[in-house]
Image (cartoon, rainbow, N blue to C red; front, side, top):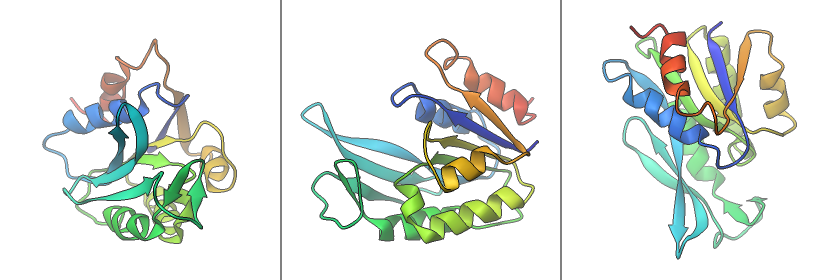
Length: 171
């Protein structure tokens, strides 16, 4: 199997696990992205999408106007279209795709949905975080027969990066 999905409750450390996996692969060609919280006054105000090639953009903020909203956040679908889709482009030289996350905000982008479909069919290794609950693409990806779904918990999150590196065949 070449597709590993990490799921769990919000705040359990899925993004941290994925970032530690990326740090453990210094000689590998990575593609994909992770998300960072934007905080102000101790409160989460939005999310930044950071690509492994160094590009980044703000994909959601409480201050962004609609019409695309997930909870209290206005979502800038154009940022997801531009950054996520290009960072998930199929390239022969890529060793592994790391994606944080297959979630409701990202799924608002048709470019993202198409790119995820292509990389999942590519045969390249994919490690992605995925929403614990969700319909549409989220549910479809979880039901794929070629997917392993690992639950990130408070108890296992510190050892998971090493388990994932071993799953990838990293010596």
